[in-house]
Length: 320
Image 1: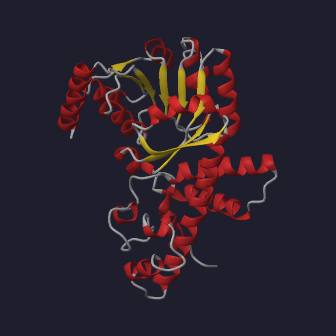
Image 2 (image 1 turned 60 degrees about the vertical axis):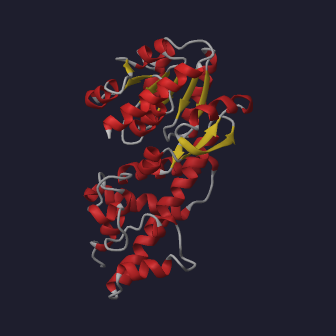
Image 3 (image 1 turned 30 degrees about the vertical axis):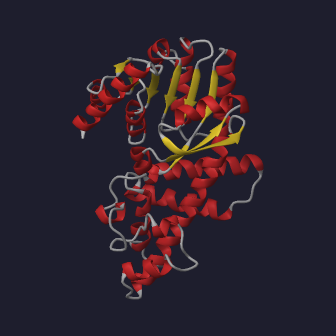
């Protein structure tokens, strides 16, 4: 796989050398399960990279692909005027951009800063304002599509930015995603993302509960899922990412709930949704219940398992 990627990078470089269409260096901070695939797709598209991550092994793997490195986010900002960040939570985003060795310490005038993390809308707006004060442009661009979408370059990006900046942001993101949507001003990308993930958490619980009920009555999981997926109960959690072992191949439920999107991350996103609901006084009873159930699941050992492991949590919970 690494050799194939290296050969592809060399082919892109040769095409650019002949066409004179060399692309500017992009900084990438955050090379986790999602970010590493996204960064590799930028390399495939011909962007020279300068990378930063706390995991030295993954950084070294990018050096092998021709990327430069920087020891701090400020070091990335010194070498690149376009930067993408993919980080776990709001606190990490604040630290990477606003910390003592953060991006804002050395950010270039008119730099383009795109944060693909899922964070609260208020933080996205605050970082955007701080970027503007430095003469830079910031966009919140959280993603949907999971690790598979990141690897295949088919992510959906929900972009919050000023309208006149969207075209240049889209041009960059098209190397990592298939559906790039302008959602309005800064913060709106995060609003759309937390709404989507609240629905995802609710639907995963609903499918888990439904599959559990059928299995308890002796139904074959694959048969039950097949009927649901050609009926009115069909949804992504049932037809693409079914949580019940034996219902579908190639999903976390078929491999002990390893890989994928962790339950702790789903709980984080549900927490963001609940905070947004409290701020806006929106009524979200199912979202609140999903938040409570994922809190219990994480406390009982499911935090590092895929979020579809809530099926196992439900199945192993004794009815009182």
